[in-house]
Length: 400
Image: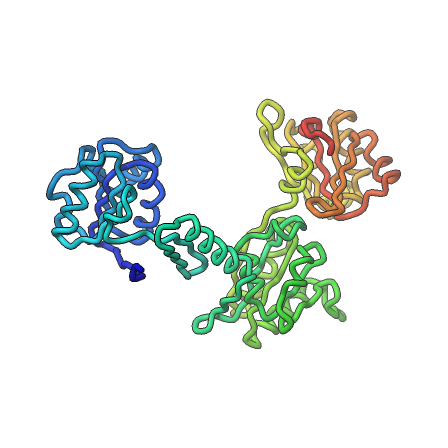
């Protein structure tokens, strides 16, 4: 068996022979390791050429020549030129330079393991002459580390604090890899009702799960009470996750929480999430932009009616736009919103789609127009949470 070892190549000369697919795959890791990379090859794939153009590697546009391994620490032989491969391998043997050969593993003095990374960990798997098995084992370990199903908590350097995690539109598979990992490492999770609730059932028994909607507010505003709960648990030395639906900064009041944590001296990590404003329409076949149909889309909170003095939305300007309008938190105000848009010049026959509980098992789509949407919401009993899409892109979807 091979002896596993991690090479520290920062600032050290590495020679790559051949600019094809193998180089395309291996070069990014060598670049990330900080190696001083010389590529020797008459030609290269476009992506490899781009690395040279960006100054990440030096490219000698020629065949391999005797002497190219002078002062090298490591060589990757990966060309289609069999003679060049043999010459480079023989020189590496004479100079005692570790040599990986993509064309002949038996002639190599080093093998490249199937490698994956997750939050500071490097997983490298060797299985002799069965690279597919190595890759499968690597993928299983890395996926488990990323989604939290394989527990590997930090023991030495974990810093208590709060992570504002965007949980995505509802389907638990649509949370980001980083968000899921932080959930697996949490001591306390303060969750919104619109977050991916199914993930909470996967948490270990010792994790305290707090429903943000049920925090006792007393005389304080709801958001102030949530801020206080985040600070209290973080100051107790706990790793806290604030699990939100969608993205923390898209109508999620995430910045208010970030400001409160900063004022209290609490470290805060923001983990973006997939916003329902884009993902939910996509889940029912509606693109928010489409060539020749919509060149822009606008996302608007509909929790305040157009005739309310508190509204910050220029509905007249929105009515003049030719692109897509996406409304969140607007089910109970859609009648007045539709009237305002029509009054300001939007065509009454403009298509409208309402997508209730998008990306979940209970997802459903209801179609209407600006002229009929208020009645359709009533007769079809559309309930929040729902994303409302207004514009010609609605007609592009198949309605399923």
